[in-house]
Image 1 (cartoon, helix red, strand yellow):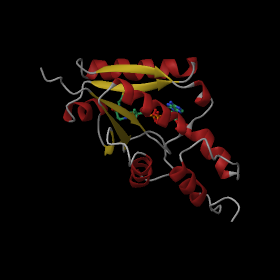
Image 2: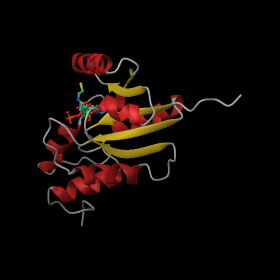
Image 3: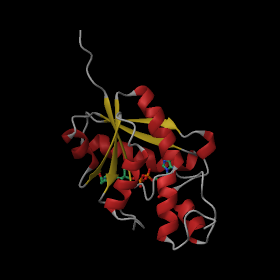
Length: 169
Ligand code: COA
């Protein structure tokens, strides 16, 4: 009997994608058949990178991984999830402080569309301290963020803040 495909949507602003996100996506691939990285166009944040830049950087990172698809989305997340024929949203939890926001998001999404479930993975301990904002804050002041974000992102972050790439050139 042919098994049904089990895709999952991993949504976020990804401004920019960090190694914490990458780790979660890789682990998502071990559980689900396909991970759709959904880059939010409608976000209450004021992103440093345009939607096109955020999508392009993430696509570059996963170019060799056919199991991962990166796409922008607009409007309600649950509507996008349904359009993509999915029923599951993947989110990461770093610390207790994430829990309240994530609980609110998951319950709201469930209220909006009952058949859509959210599953959580704990972020790898290596990346517990990382967020897109903290990486940007450090990079803006010339801090070395290599190893916290994937290489294509590192290059773009340095360019955005007017620092040379590679760092010693
Ligand atoms: N490792 C490291 N950092 C992580 C992480 C991980 N595993 N998981 C999350 N983070 C960080 C991110 O870097 C980000 O940091 P920042 O706040 O400094 O930018 C933060 O945690 C959370 O960001 P992210 O995972 O990108 O999600 P988000 O909270 O920006 O995304 C959406 C929220 C896009 C899912 C939500 O706004 C949405 O669904 N929008 C669509 C509209 C909609 O449907 N609204 C109603 C929903 S209730």
